[in-house]
Length: 109
Length: 117
Image (tube, rainbow over all chains, first blue to last red; front, side, top):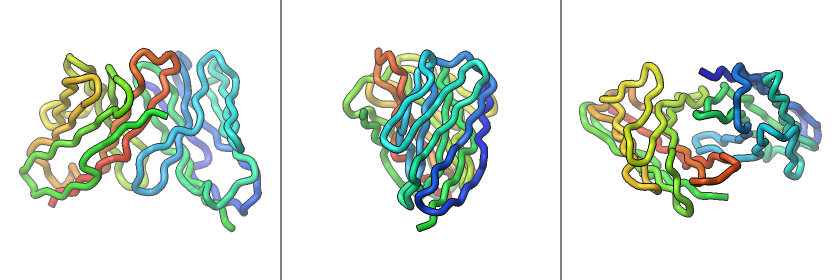
């Protein structure tokens, strides 16, 4: 079973800072890796999807990288805004999708 | 992106009753859907993989007789919590990806919050 770890568990930064969220996973036999955000009491919103053959994906201020062989992915958020405050989850995609405990991000105005 | 809809979004029931939660893919067909539960301030725990036209595959430790999953069509999967008890109170979320899509991207419903009194 895939084990997913996300570091840090919580992060509080002032508005405007760039930040990096880390995700590591134990089984590198994945098809893709997806990053999500979850607002309190809500479902998950897909942010970025990286195929196993890709090294990174970008969407606006977000950039995600994938090192499949070492079982790692990072999500880079540039120029953070208060609206970015949420829990960020990564999910390596195999036959099933397992989640880590996420990183709870607070961006202070 | 593709849309996954869950219903009801909130449900309160008495202990001992059964509750059904629906998960629909609104604009695509999904041969596989996933059911998760989430406790407060914790991550999503995969409960089972729902396969259209066949039995669901349950994760270790998840009681299949307690959590009945039916995936009768390419756009609908249901989770029935049978004889619910207060410890079943949780946030249940389903996900699905478009059938045949090469990307394997998952889309999630908004979740269903179950409270068992």
